[in-house]
Image (cartoon, each protein chain N blue to C red):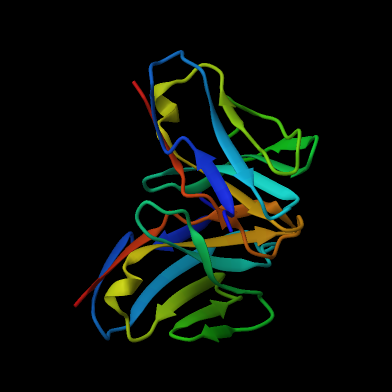
Length: 112
Length: 114
């Protein structure tokens, strides 16, 4: 079963708009929640990450919101740009790197 | 900086053939791993290594072998390829073995098994 459920599968946003991608997890032992960004033909690259002791983390136009009680976290991209068009993966891990589980991915398209 | 280098980028195999996907990193990272990426499935861990001479199974290890004779190299072997192994394979490395920290990925190897 998929331990990290990600939605939507695909997302189209106009330039300047807000992109929101959601993830939900089941295992309460998860304690690290990164987001990876992947451009076509490239490997994923770490975008931003959060630990469960904070409810929000912001880096530039990218914000992670974390709701521990609901076991959900989301990525918000403010002022979305065509250069943000990529596939985004959420992930969750506990204790060790080999415990990390990825969501299915969201293909974001930002239209100019 | 080369980072994580994977070869080949593309490969077509026939069912039953064997091959090795190569992965090398020049960052002196202890942790290395192999993932497969399939549509709608995200990235799934195949095998990983926490240092030279140490390997272990991940989420989907069946049909794959690995070895780690040096810190830099972590090849993935398919002994008898099956169509179900058609996928994009990513090698990744990380400094240290803890649960946090950045995974550095290669650019991927696209494998098609006919």
